Image (cartoon, rainbow, N blue to C red; front, side, top):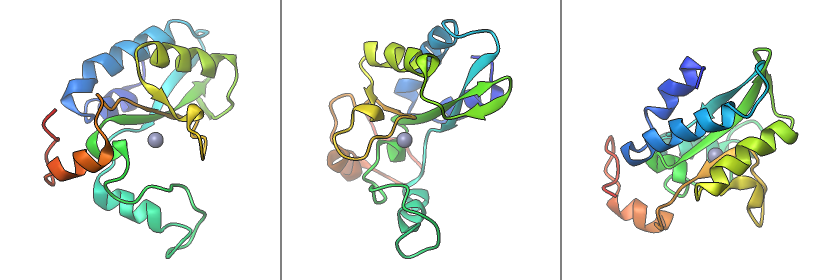
Length: 149
Ligand SMILES: [Zn+2]
């Protein structure tokens, strides 16, 4: 993992996921051409941040970007990441063969890819739930703490 910003974001994920996520990013990056790196654009998103995002396109300006209210996303528990590719240092959201190499690495490790979601496809998104439903995670949630898994 070459990107310092991404490493910082991974280090705020749920402690149970950090090492695995970094190892998978390393593994995926090794499969990519030398001019392409992975950028983690988001990891942990607090419930307050999620509520603000949910308001976007509904009660606040902008377009709708999520169907999950605060507490309803694995991001809220540090159990999800969104990524893009940096091609020659420039952000790319093109879902090409390189993108799918990253997808394959994470799926093989048991992560769920947002591109496989039944309703709104979310191709930058991976999550690992350890079998937990978000409703149950919300019951365990205490602000400023990671849920005990
Ligand atoms: Zn996401």
